[in-house]
Image (cartoon, helix red, strand yellow):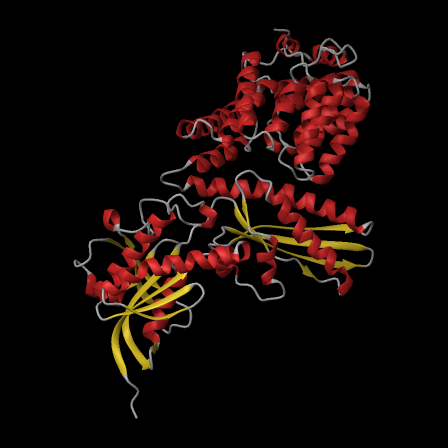
Length: 589
């Protein structure tokens, strides 16, 4: 007997990030999905559609007309966008929709075959809030549906023998939501800084170490959630993937995240090896990989250090990745602009880089004057310009920075970075004691914040406790050994050694600073002072020459004008450092 067949227009729809939503709020998500589905029933029926079947997050519809199927897809997306208005982004119900025209096999009330499979595969690769239409369906609706179609070319779809021509819909004024477009970014895609930390794999061969490996995963998840503007998938949802083979692009689609972090822990003798890799979950490209060994000691102390190192490294890697994405954005939002600002800032403390960075932060504030990232960004740039002696209006810059940070703290008093920045500003404006307290507050909010340890060390130097500086700088370097700011920390420790008269140690740390960033002029001048005290005047003058090439406006007068502490026990601007600068040939004014 020949099986019953017919030609049908098929619509497949699926809820984006359903696993994540259920993991965070099972009852609420089930109710919301059901309400969205019931709201769409009259539209489906009015266009002659039939609900073939539903799953927890999916919907399969059949239409006698392709035009009706596409119009229904547009109407569903429009209705969904309207119902999402006022709902927090993380809790919105978003659909991907695929539409195909094909031959189907009839089995009772169900339909089967490649016609159905192609619609389902189109839905699986569609962007959140979008509609993908097969070439077969497009040929029947061209000129008959009020929507813009973008030809995406042929796509190889999973388990489909031949590539399928695919079109995306930009419904325009008639449409539902921003489908994929060649001219505008998809604002309903994965959020900025969205990441899932997948359960680390225990490769120690010891089942009793499972708790340690899981602890690394959980602690890292908690640390990443403290990054401003981040969206981190909760532990319970992430652990549903434990012990299963993973397709990172599929996980990215299911959870609606941009990044996935994987890791493993191995034991070799008396050492523990941790390997991690950060992947772009949309493209599948590896963005960063790291491996480090740690001698076995107290497991909990070791876990804390491993998590701190990973969190600090990931912070800078994620910001760099977001900055690269933002550069491709046609219509950047405030977060895009803030990420681009940090991208420029992290290129080095030169007048040009800092000026460009500030322009991005200013553009973010022009869109939203209370944007936290923009306020912290402009304050950080102004502080860096002042503290690097790159501007004449040092006092004014620091005053403007303080005003920006006061606004930021009024908005978010428990933001660790805002507290840290205010602490740094106070440390360098004759308020080192309260500045250190603010840095300690930042550590309470984010215990693995390496920068806070480093600036407490700087505060100790300015409080006349230079002998305490080293412990804080070493702690910062242990927590974040490859930090982009490590050159500043090394410079601070070099200055402390110089103040204490340990000139050889000062030279060693200042050379390490220069190796980390050859464009940071202050380390050159400090090194020149240390070398001059060691009687190596030719080398000292060479460093001054290089420093002045980087910052031609630096003079002893400008340095003296930047007095950072009124504490009589603190390093005086007329101390041996200034004497060393004079010997090395730094201009007086």
